[in-house]
Length: 491
Image (cartoon, rainbow, N blue to C red; front, side):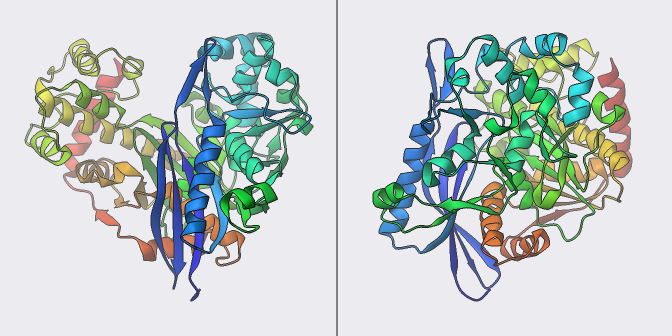
């Protein structure tokens, strides 16, 4: 891989998006951000929509800049958040901007669906996906119930990254990792389930052809070429679900690892060859999402830095600098106050500070006062929750887990990285921060034949970034704290 290759990645989150050019040269990857933009929800008629046309416009804008700068990109790949989709009419027109997973039309629909359509346990046994009211299955049920005109007139349904690729190429596909978030896909057959589709009045042909990550969808249409000044550049189905692209970027040396995608929310899991669907995974609400090269991402969602971010908005006297604030928190006596970060009371309270104090009061603990004590409580508790989930993962895994890779923005939090190593008792490797964009780009490189498989991808990523290593410390102190955590969270 001596020749320089350029790849154009579109990375869309629920609040913002960006376009990035990744350069591969001599088995090393570098990134350059081209554009950054807001992803705004549109509220109208009692609903919340994504503006898919605005996102398309931003992609075109980024491609124009690439053309003007004469960057010879090899291909284009798009990743986004999961579950949401777009209805396409028989004339290939977008019938309406897609509803957002934040829209309230699904409130109460999940329970009604289980009562009227398919039993809850049967849905999990089929899909292995954790239950969230905004999963595509329940969105479709709500739309059908409400006589949604876009769904009624749809001849195709495309998940958001597949829709944007369609707008660029005119080709309609259903990428596997994004489809796996829908709670309609059976990970055993690796296709959408006919019975679940029938339960919401649909058949398999309304979705595009199922394709795996690193599949070339098509090339830019004549229209897009004229608008951008580019030629017939291929568009690749990367791992359309952003978490799948991020996990593809874990720079692991072998299969014996777990990952923690750390940000506002934390996702902790393992890569497995087959889905894990049993009574224990159902009881613990683990999920099985599509991974790279036929693997499954077996993981659990954990409330992450959401607690800290919400508290920072409330603190009026705390230092603005994360480093200064967190350094002060480290001076506080550890484990004075412990919470379960995933307790329902922290989902979206009016005041996160008061919710944390209230939890500690209710569990007869020291009630933290001031930003330093509350910050220390959050970091201690997150690390202990990570230990609990990590312990479950070790029970599910068919291999020893020797390393925990922390990726995403949260990997920069060295205090929490060290706490996580202490709590789990294994080596923690932190980085990369830009996992999603890196995974997107490396899957494009696989599509054009530069790399042959995930392990070659991960080797290049490991060569391209600096990881920070954290080894477990203070074993007895953390063991005692974990026993206290179990006592507190059982109450």
